[in-house]
Amino acid sequence: MVKRAKLRKTLKEEQPRRDKVDISGAAEFFKGIAMRHPLRSDLVFVCIGTDRSTGDSLGPWVGTLLQEQGWPSVIGTLERPCDANHYEEAVAGIPSGRTVIAIDACLGGVNSPSRYLVAHGPLLPGRAAGLRLTPVGHYSLGCIVGPMSVKPYRSLQQASLFQVMGMAREIAETIREAWNQFPAEVAGQSRFDGKDAIS
Image 1 (cartoon, one colour):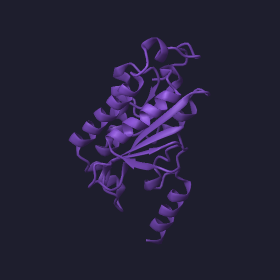
Image 2 (spheres, helix red, strand yellow; image 1 turned 180 degrees about the vertical axis):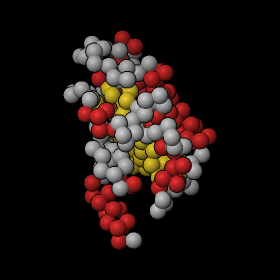
Image 3 (cartoon, one colour; image 1 turned 30 degrees about the horizontal axis):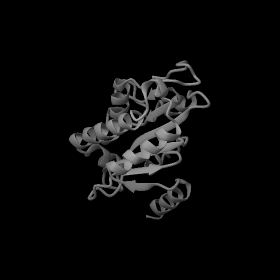
């Protein structure tokens, strides 16, 4: 019990302020990012998780949908997940100067439509499970896929696949709509000229 309390205290101290919102709040969050960073090829989406756990597959599902939309730099898909084994290498390979948006599944209160945690700051992936992975993201989105538990892996495994896929589609669609507010000739231009694309 003391160990879990210490972990919660550490997480609270290190985690940037995160606001709990519903999907419309997440949409406003992404629209705000798009206003500040309209150039698609300046962005990198880091979609964290694995295809071997129902709840933790949310990140790779989002990454796959974004890749299908044509986003040039997406790390973490169902085909090539950004899981704990590949995470550090993937994050270290992000070109400098890019704006990074991190997306990951998390656990928390599920009896509310506000299932998203948005922050102008990095994600701390794996902390609830005791992992100490490098923080990532100028902006971040946590998606609550199951209840907090003393056995987080079990909660992630028991998450509803139907719900996870529905949330992934919602997120990918809000991202698409946020950047669709700009003409293609504006959103498609970049100081990187299409180089250093990540997949």
